[in-house]
Length: 141
Image (cartoon, rainbow, N blue to C red; front, side):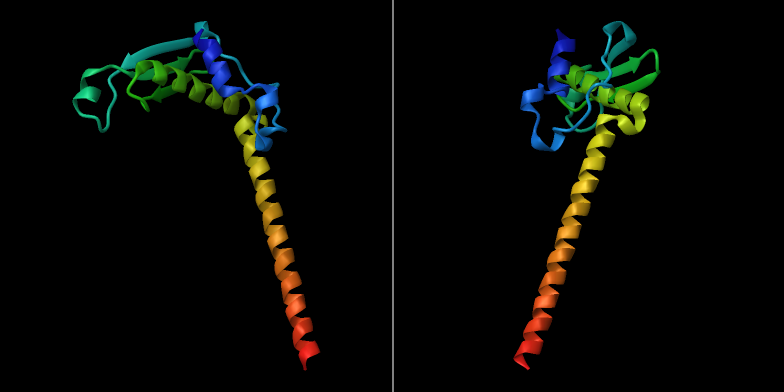
């Protein structure tokens, strides 16, 4: 059941993907086998006082085939940390296995394209504005 929950959190259904992630290739996205994961719970650290010091809700995951490790202590509840840790492990595993074809790399490329396009449009608009001001000055003289 946890695996299905992680899949729902990580991969939205094709019809519900937002516009910015519409062209991402999820075909190479890895899946987690529970038999490949070693999970331990430890005490967390950081702010929180007694609630943090007494409870073992920090999740430590190790992917046995690749020896990738994740430590997650973002929530107070161990169940939320388990889900979050699996999401982080999937992202890290995707980056390790797929490199420049990973989802994070694809999103980064899309954002760079959008940024470049935005800069190009701004420069074009500035150039048009400058040309218009030049014409106004010469027409006014």
